[in-house]
Image (cartoon, rainbow, N blue to C red; front, side):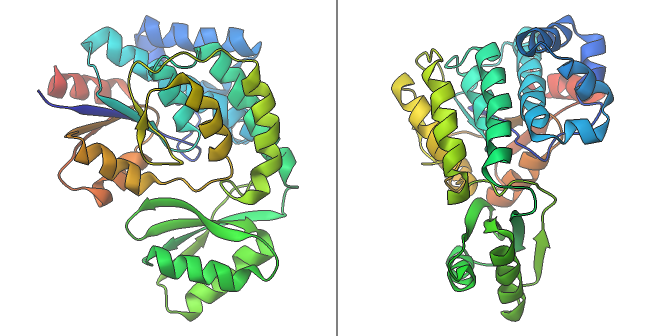
Length: 311
């Protein structure tokens, strides 16, 4: 039996129009977006389907929009194929989609939590104070050393270990700029400042984590029906009591994505399905383990091709 992992994307995968074609063609997708609108008393579906992009890029919209789209696609897969993944993982925000898929979080609770998470993250650091940058073609220990040298009393640390040769750093904007200069001075081939308003997955998010813990306190968490490989530990877990602590830790801890994918492959996973808009994670997985078979879809034609391959 082929073992599947379902992966759920995080911020950066969103685009205006995501989910619209599949919602127009499948009632289960349309109903999921309607459920999201009801849960948030908002027109989230309209922002997903029509934009404008400026509204979709507001963090408190982006996070529930991605969660809603991924959950809609997940329900579509279940209704049309009955596929059962052996494990789940999500990149940063995508971990909430994975926990909904695992049955740990109720969809409406997760939507309200990630909308709050987005605003807590934005409030933690004034716009322009923080930054993130992608460092390409450098080893993790070298990136860590560059950050240590660039900090000078401020925060700059490795935040996402995405795949071999792609590490994202995060922290105070001046420290990130010093790290960029330090990386270039060492001859690192490419360092890109990312278009984000929040320095995620570093200690500057500690206050957001405290507020998030308060929201999570009011939410019911069920045991996970499918193991989720957490960003913080890159290990699978199923215990309900671990969900909240890991989600709070995640907001200011690095995303161990490369290690997470390697963990899933080592457990016998041979096919990875990216459940959500775009194919950011598929691109990363390809660089982590070339032996994994990849599937993703966000159009009707893409979904039909996926069905043809797996059913």
